[in-house]
Image 1 (cartoon, rainbow, N blue to C red):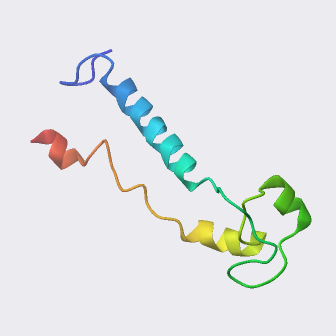
Image 2: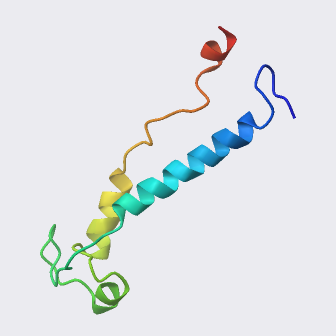
Length: 87
């Protein structure tokens, strides 16, 4: 299905690229190496269940939740603005 001046399949390619980028970013954030017994941020002991589930974890659940909430934007808008599409 054509979408304006885009060639067939362009929309699906954008979706595939977006998913691929998200997977790559998630893999980069995976922890590796030796984990810690105590949280790097607050110093509290990391729960045994968390250390078993994520052996490389270095933060407790509370501190990791705060880190995740800070997050960062993906930084790339594949669709662009409507103004740029009209030019």
